[in-house]
Length: 90
Image (spheres, rainbow, N blue to C red):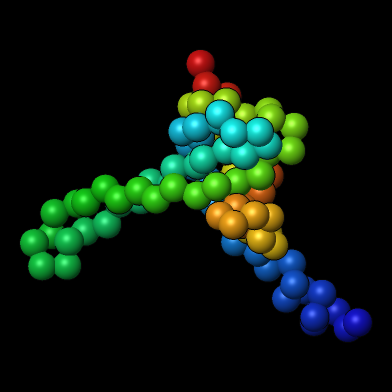
C-alpha cells in the first residue's frame, strides 16, 4: 500500500459531546450541540443531535464530556467509538 491510501484511510470524523445515557452495556448516547444563525431572521438557534457510541469498558457516565470518532458499523445504529473522556461529570 502506498502512503497516500494510508493517509486517506485515517481521516475520520471526530466529534465532542455530552453523554446523556449510559444504561446500555458498552454503549453510550452522546448529544452533540451546535448553534447557528437563522438565515432570514438572524436569531441564534440551538440544535442538537444524538448518536450512539461504543464504550468498551463502560467508563463514561451521564454528564461526561467525551470525544467520539467514527468507525465501521458495530450494530444497527452504532457507528461511533468513544475515543476519550475529556472531562468527568461532577
